[in-house]
Image (cartoon, rainbow, N blue to C red; front, side, top):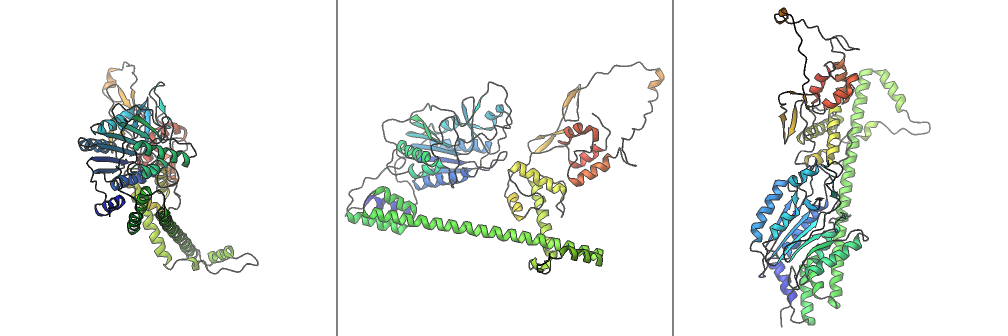
Length: 573
């Protein structure tokens, strides 16, 4: 009896773990950029790159390199290393998921550390699509670049344009690959953008993993099936597109193995083998091999049962997470109640019976309502002092983590004061989060700890400007001096006046500066006192009085300590 071709495929997957036994050498580089530093994070590229990498490995590719969250230098190094693999390859694939941008008809892929403050910065900070095409060029039979990167330009609002003629369009620009048997696949056709969707993977990547490595399926038909599924999933709003051309030969990433006959016994043996493996991939392989028949319907039922179980487990995990979040929130509320009770007890002790009487009047229930008992009954088993201590340790740890990612504060204390609240406000602004700055919980600490790089931009003192991760001193050339807003301005010429010969022998006496209007004794114009009050409130916006505009231009490059000293100066502009 002949050995079924399906049995051979399944045994190869199980025993050899997807290792290719084919003559053609197939290599792939998969890049997923999710954790962008200067724009909001993307959720799907991390999942899309993982799904694409697993699909290619299961298809028996000889080399599959998975890279995630690459900075500019790392992305160029990954492409440079991958070109060494493509020299003796027959099939070469590069998959990129992340942000892309088009400038004057040229497409660029954006690394995670790109800032793109101006349109002229794009060639220096991003990687051109032509670089990817040159990397896959050495492959002998098929060269393929897949881009799930046609999202809206996240830098469009903040990017400064160098000229009115320079164009920054939506999506990516149309491309015509020059090499033979070279294809470039866009998640959406030129000039349009894609939707990330509501599932784990984007609509484009989710469709590709179903069809791209189906045995014997020509790659053009695979992209056609994926296109139809994306159009259906997005209500015809997103249409994937392919640029380039292939010859008349079929190009299948996984060649088909010709069966020698589909006898009932062979089909049954293949069904039993797929049932022993029991994975979704095994049932998909069986269904693609036997599209009709009694065992096909049984296999479809087994596959549906497996998917239902996976959905049940996913729902159970989500419910468990919701319960954990609710328990954590309840603990946070109990801690807040315990702290309030501790403060109330301390106030009663300090104020004596009068405070108790006033407190009793305030806590007296409305007419007709039964008292609920002492408030302390709502506290957790731990003592209020322990709860307060735990809250203070969380606050101190959160301030330490905020300083690590560049958001401050200047000093770390056990109190969550105005300076700490300003630090969390800056973190929310730069990280795209919306945490409560008044009473952050443990989940905020966990979120900040997961950040591995700087979140808030570097702020330097007056006379210094950011240079990478350090502050560099500003040096003005001859004839210029540093102004209050950290710019080099030309020194105005001064008319020399003739002085009596004796003037050079003794300097003119200098009168003490007059105190500013509204000054308090011992203070320069009352500004130091106002600066201290503004410091406790978390801002300095009014400490310069009539010279607020001058102060606001300078405070951007000062620490709070320098700002306090600056507020004590006489007005300079």
